[in-house]
Amino acid sequence: MRAITAEFAELPWIYFEASEGSLAARYGNPSLRAPNYDLEAARPALRIERVTDATWGVPRTRTADENAVGAAPPLPIVGAPVDASTFRFVRDIPAGAAGLIAVRLDEAALAHSNGMPSRFGDVRVIDEDGRQIPYLVERSSEPLSVDVSLAKLSTRPGALGPSRGSETVYRASWPYAGLPSPRLVLSTSARVFRRPIHVVSEREPDRPHRDPWVETLGTAMWVHADQDTPAPALVMPLPSVDATQVLLIVEEGDNTPLPIGGARLLLPAYRMRLFRERGQSLRLAYGRTDLAPPSYDLALLAPRVFGVSAVDVPPGPEREGRAGGAAAIVSPRLFWGILIGAVLVLIGLIARLVRKPTG
Image 1: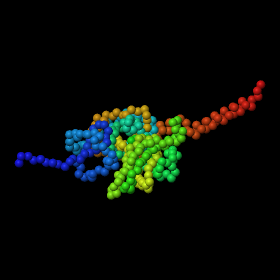
Image 2: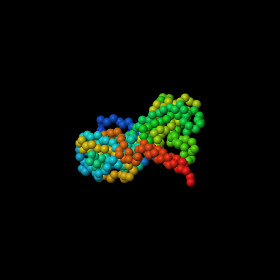
Image 3: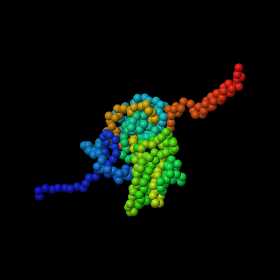
Image 4: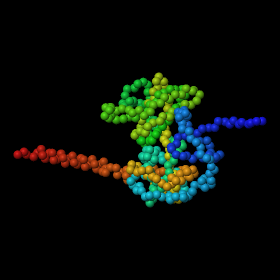
């Protein structure tokens, strides 16, 4: 026997979206089930030859201290003071046990904050004494899913112009305008079909357009030709749009209308990791344009903060702070009252001038 060669099965590859910087991968928990991510819907659109390769670091065994959620970090847990009343939106973070917590930035926070392009520069966590609580932002592997309501229109909107054939038009609605990097996901019960899909936004007349018009946000060809398998969901990347409603146009051709079973938006998901003291009441604040991204010493411990489990804590409902009401110096009712009074005074002066005898 001169040599022995062993051939193993091909190892699986892992594909995911990630921002710049290093990531921590954790494995070795036999009690967990295989994950089921919405990213699976994008598998047909992946182009493996264009994906950037990543490499593994040196593996290490996590210690007991790393697996435990510490009640106190090795850094000060408060930062510089900040006035919560200068932010447009404020939300409560419920009090609870001490330790590392993860606060999800939901669709409201994504729409009303400056977002990832500014590295969430206007987002702050504030305690009862008006001091900042240091935090780190992480990108979640599973996207944030937002329900979309579809209403089939019986009357064709005038902004679409004359029909070019058999079309079904839906009005799609979601809760907030300005959602970042949305992906529209459509599902159907049909098995064999081919349909062009368009997503457009209605626009008011402007200088280049005398009449209402539509802006095309996305176009896709939805095709499935296997009677024995369900059709995969259609995933359409869309730009951020300053509206809560768009039009979904399905070109039916000479076929019966394609049944669309449901729609949702997939958004990039982010969480804030921070240390909370026992019973501490915190507030999440955002909605300013004059702030630079915060710089906390907690970033020096990023591998440890990201490498341990954290308790998920959802923020409370969004409410407008004092800055939101300060945008208008006077209320609309007072403004119109002053304007009407000024008009009446001006009419009276004009009437007196008209009745004044001329010499």
